[in-house]
Image (cartoon, rainbow, N blue to C red):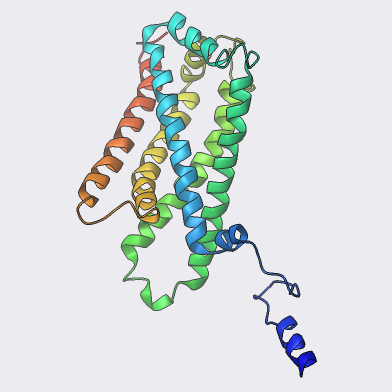
Length: 249
């Protein structure tokens, strides 16, 4: 009898597509990640991390309107944060893995949730879910555009690989050189528009996922989502537009 009981415990039916592991249960973190709720939480938290970075990055970019000394000085200051405890440039190298982890976690969770949604969506509900499906499609394509742009942006203004007139240690001159070309400014503006739509929908989704919203806060949260999206879109787009218009040179 005891032997039969042990056999039944070991021979539990495994999840589809997974190899059974006798006598072991996944950890709480693994179980949370495998659930849709956990993936949405990862997307929300990683999205907020990236949003905080984008606000700081936009404020730094706007120093281009103050001239090369201000922007180049700001770029130099970023590399001195933490001195003398940290060496020159270490702060940026410590921050970059955090951002990369946030981007990867956000992208992987979004992809896996998208696949689950496509597999589970009943055909007869297509018309009823038209509005949510449109928002989902916008987020998917916006995410793809932003992912490709991140690669371009790094090659353009970080490694200076594709910048036609790059000067190491002169970010102001590199920005002007990049946005002086039609494709440099055009790619940037397209990506920023996708970013604005992504933030508008993503901020509201994050608030719902984290349980921050309620009937009394919904209007304020929707206003904050729209305001953040508009602020970041205008702030980022203003730089390439000013360069292409000859206001920054």
